Length: 117
Image (cartoon, rainbow, N blue to C red; front, side, top):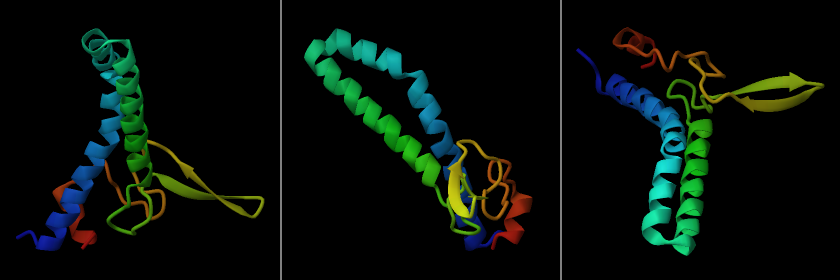
């Protein structure tokens, strides 16, 4: 039987997949949406639409870079590297494991739920 805690963890890992795919989808549909907006709205409103779309794209990148791991609570895509006694967080966009605790995020299965709760 699956406990409520493991169901919540499973839901959070599914959210990671959605959040990581959102910038890719937004990038791929940028030209068709903005092109259609230019044709339908005219040149002035087209520019407003383009800037609004870029804002959504940047926000989705922010979400994917700062999504927190359900296991350790640290940002999933960031790993702290020490260089000349400086702690430098480096964010890689599509990690398969958490940068802090090593939890497997993108290959999450039902068998992995037991050690997270």
